[in-house]
Length: 56
Image 1 (cartoon, rainbow, N blue to C red):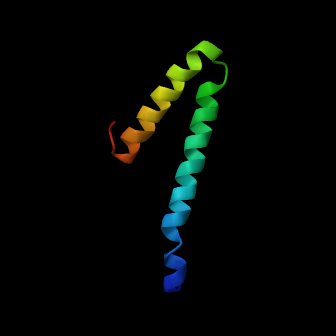
Image 2 (image 1 turned 90 degrees about the vertical axis):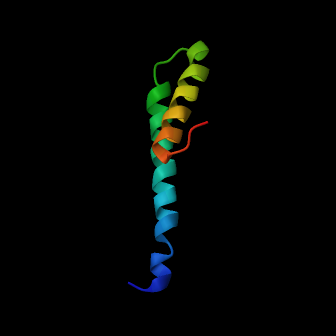
């Protein structure tokens, strides 16, 4: 594998992480009432931040 191909690895990791976050949000919002969506999104964002190693 050439050096330029290795430069794309961080981009691929970023895309996989973003896609995973979108899927988590879609699963979390399925079946929730509209009044509860903000709370669910806040909780999902907190979990994603914890996984990435950053706390708000």
